[in-house]
Length: 634
Ligand code: ADP
Image (cartoon, rainbow, N blue to C red; front, top):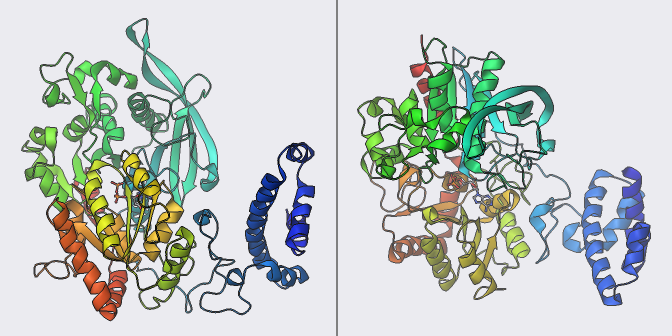
């Protein structure tokens, strides 16, 4: 590796055209033969592109070969900004070029830790009696993250581990997982998992050989499960977490059974099985019906609802993918989907079954819990939540964010680090993003951002309203998102706002770009129609941005209006509005933009105060532990 790097460094220390020739010499024979068939212009363009890439690699290489003669030669060919001669506040930043996918590479030649080091993390209280908790989930950040569910599983698991509990996560072994991020990955064992399948129009029950792997993700132990035979079974195969080529319902029903079967075979009896969303809800029914009908085992079940948008509507015959016939659960008091009563055939609702069978049900904020119980947020599950036992077993516990993962003082994805006491780096992050996205570079323009799945829940029309209003008022707007509404925003990105100096719409998913946007943003808008908790507003606070949110669910529990928050609410940290129409959003956005323009020092103080707020898992992990204890037998 080193020899290759050194040779490339030598090549590039020459004039660019010689460097390009040197690059051509390094290509394999077959490739160089191909190049002779393309035009000279194409070849020059290709070499320029390759040269740019090599310059970036060189800058990184240069940082790792301090003091070599090569290093001195390299500095000459790098643009001035990329390698300033003497260190300065922004020394070492590799300033992006417009059009470059800058978020895919390191923003600096080397990390520049904040002077005095990052603030010590808060001291974590340890609990006296350790509990054994196993999470069953479809997502886990950062290896299998689509939205907040992945963040929450990892954040909560790490927080409970830090409090002294034994915590393990069980996750599908999706083909697309980045295996390099799983420490100590090893095959644990193969097991036979009962599974229904269709044969000649009939449902038969057989078994599916399943491989269980073990590893650690960010220090948290993880079991990963998948069918042992990848060639004849496509479950969990494909390039994405959801929407692979397999039947999702079949895959998660099988996954639930496989998790329980593995715990049985390996003789594990955790205190609590914490199931997340509809994907894992069937484990609640199976556990009490098949694995522990007498209640003799100490394990109890908690179902955590992150979103009621999808509750897992399931045909009765499909349920037999678990190896158990679905008819057994098709009654109103169990899992019958009340919306389908009188239909032919009537269906099951996995979330409902999960709720009915679980010992405790939690959702991710107190306000959303109230909206579910009394405000209509339960939708077709309202009768389930109206059962008398629900009021004793349903809890709203506010999510936190993983403050190690989301820490602007140490975040390696940022051009410059910063925190509440040393906020200067934020301005550099803003300039970095403006340059990278090809926006007008102006520190005085308020940068308004949205990072979101683009689905109706997130208030698509209000995101659009925020975009138009911001640009109209002379601010800058950046969107990072993907989902059902991609075409709407793609149309705007390629039409009206193409190459706009104050607006960039990135219709994609990128964890790395998300970090850079939060660090650069002045305002983060979250105009959801409903929001069980929402993490983006908390990440915004942590990264010194001011959240502007629609006051619903967890947004109402975390953002308190600077002008209107009632006495006794939390620290006033942002802007809120109630309506679902454009004027409601405009009112809040106008107030934010006016404050930004008219009172910069008040704005700066607000951003700094926001960075000091506690948005960690600290308090919430304790609340979860209290619920674990309350359901565990003495
Ligand atoms: P939800 O779970 O409903 O999507 P949350 O606010 O709870 O909403 O969590 C969203 C998480 O997903 C945040 O960490 C946010 O930064 C991230 N996210 C959403 N969309 C994108 C995207 N396009 N690229 C990168 N991260 C994204």
